[in-house]
Amino acid sequence: MPSLGPQPFPGQEKRLRLLAFVRQDAVIRVDKRVEDTAMVWPHLLLIEFIVAMLWLVGLFIISALFNAPLQDVSSPDHTPNPSKAPWYLLNLQELLLHMDKALAGVIVPTILLFVFLPLIPYIDRSREGVGRYFTDKTGLRIFQFSAVYSTVLTFALIFIDYLAKKAGYIEWSSDHLPGGKQLFPNWLIPIGVMFGLSALLVFLVDRLFGATTRGKMIALFTGFVFVYVVLTFVGTSMRGPGMDLYAPWSLPPTIQ
Amino acid sequence: MLDLPTQAWEWVRRSYVWRSFFRHGYPDSRKNQSLAVFTNVFLHLHPVKVRRHALAIPYTWCMGGLSFFLFLVLTLTGTLLMFYYHPTTDLAYADIKDMETVVVFGQLLRNMHRWAAHGMVITVFLHMARVFYTGSYKPPREFNWVVGVLLFFLTILLSYTGYLLPWDQLAFWAVTVGYNIAAATPFIGNEVSYLLFGGFELGPNALLRFYVLHVVGLPVLAGFLMAIHFWRIRKDGGISGPL
Image (cartoon, rainbow over the protein chains, first blue to last red):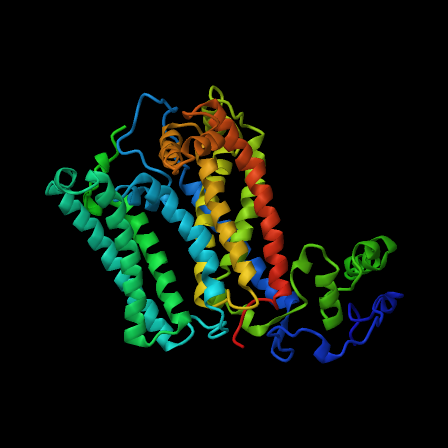
């Protein structure tokens, strides 16, 4: 005999009153099916609780083992070499080495954050593939292709820039190019490369996989993610004193 | 004797006072499970039922929820840190040193705040990637994606403004990089850097501005956007899933 719990408390039933009948087709039904549901209590709350506790314990352990960095008190006359931004901004700092400051530090991130990312749902308006990773097999292949494409090209571009500058390209450009070492090396070429390679990626996934709008968005977003990650990695582990390029395993320490 | 605790507990649960707090019995029936969720201000962020699909950890990896969880951890640890910190150039660094050597559990508190902040940048980014790759920005969730992008931007700003506060070499020169970028804004570079840093060099004004933005301005704005973000998840039909 169930003794606890299930019985309603005295007066409890009165709290659930029927206010109105609403016809089924009068309600906006947003992809919600009644049959395939689970109660939030206990199923979802249990998962949330366990995950939150695991992370809290993990955070405690990490915080007990590793101290947050603290260097000497700041002094404006004493510049560490190299001075680096926090790691999640090192992608921008890496970009600064390859184009004009305004382009790398302000224009590109502004376009990414306030134009490209917010516009995604307004360009790709089909409901194709909602709730499925990469939509389908083609989407997965587009993701893999774009990930390799952008990783390889980003490393290649950084390396080409490194070799070109080593070969005296800056000096050559200031003597031979209209606009000197500003117009072409710092503005036109980077803009052309960024737009050109993005357009080429869209063209390639269209040709190779017959990509839909969703597929093209997967290509562009994957490009963004992997360029972001590669630039962060290069900025963090491959830039030493003077922001020169080093192999990650032979990175010299910062000169304080 | 043995059932005395049970009886006492039962007496408490049936008391007038208890029932003024909780308007449902123990949630072991569908009705009480529903009431437990929608009569509780914290739990009613959730619907009473979710689609079974939404419970699968490999679908969301809990990244959105964990971002919010880390935000709460950061709010709590950050508030405690505020008791020991003066946002002035002569005291800030010494306060952090005191935190590490004098304040009880100060080092642990600072470590938790620091690592949770790094963690939140990662979880928010992964959450964004998950939402993108599962097509969860598609109708009717377009606007919530935009709110999410703004929240990603705020997360970066929160982390970055906090980075200056210890006022050590690491903080100073990392933020100097940002200062130089802001100053390079076309046409309004001077205005932007003056607005953000309160001057044309990194000094007391910059520290104060970053502090106020870090502890009040940006968290309030982020809280505001999070309210919209969570509300819209519910209004747009809950967590996304196959049609």
